[in-house]
Length: 291
View 1 (cartoon, one colour):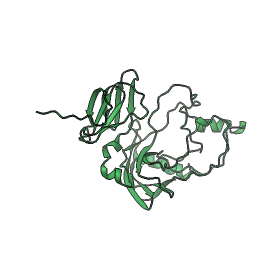
View 2: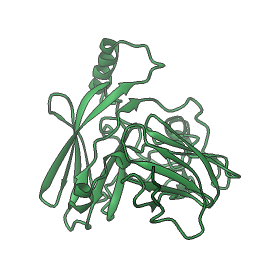
View 3: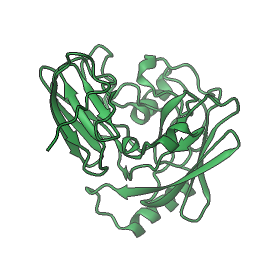
View 4: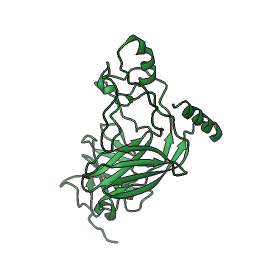
């Protein structure tokens, strides 16, 4: 038996408290030190920091739960890194390519919670849950000069939704409410490196007249449609389009003359026991009403 040093990438005099291997990718290691989290894709030969927005704190343990990395810390409570599927897919071929569209994890078709009070003030301490919808990742080696598009297709190849890197002018009036209530426009980022885009698993919203938060006539309608207790999540455009059905879909990213496709699976919320026929009938009714 012989020992080999595997400390390349750690700061000098840094103590490693815990190391764990990913259960789905052999050689993908996570290490916790006195100050943060590190990751290695080559069995520990090279390490890179992975703390992101985690404050500097001793890391005491890891647990990989499905596609999430749960982190135990000393003094900063529990932290969860949501959806580590891109970490499992990263390879030298991907990092040297001009663009890459990662295979997305299955998305769950869920609805918002029933608590529809106004959003909490921004100074209120609160954790952040994973976004609702399909979490899609793509990698850019350099920022593209042309417009990027992301298109969603159903199982029959019909286009369902399309998103762009070019922001569109909003037809909606300025809201008589704090701007932090509202979600940013769904546009594709051109930033170099790993980018994330969330598809809300909905058809495009129906055509509607623009309206604001002012005016007694609109007050009841708007508040019941748009309020959501999580700041930065409420869409400005109301009403929203109907939810898609559970099933198989395809995502296509077009950038720099390239077209990349990946399959996407949408699963039903396990708390919902409606049949596929019932959900399909509901969707047909909503689309007939253009909702």
